Image 1 (cartoon, rainbow, N blue to C red):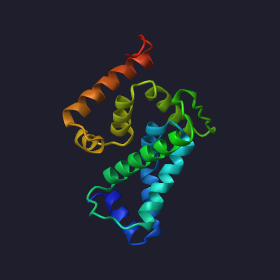
Image 2: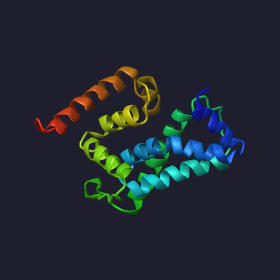
Image 3: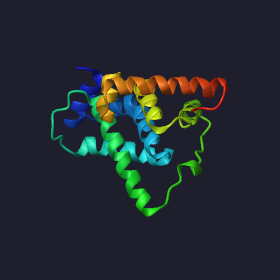
Length: 174
């Protein structure tokens, strides 16, 4: 059993130290997942906090075998629900979202990476984030997104090709 799943199970038993370890190990991955869905860093932070509150307070309906994958799927679903709720309240235009970074190196790196990845079409951006930031394999990505393994690999390769074009300035992304 991996350390993330161990900490997850300890969280369910009320181990506060495990909650901190789990949060620290999964925070950036889950932030990227939530940000990819709704395009707002503040909302992404709220979503990640909501996920951890749920982890601490609620009992699982099923036995969790891979907590990393489970938390990513939970975060993605929560972000989609949050976006649907917000769209009902406001007419959101993702192109008008402005992210303000603090001066920390982690935030600047997060924003730089997301600025490049945001220029990709949504499916490729989500897969690149799950693969690079989330460190998921293609089977896990396929499970999270309910697509085939071959399709997750194909979209990842397409996204990486487009990122190279964007980063090296060899033309516009397709």
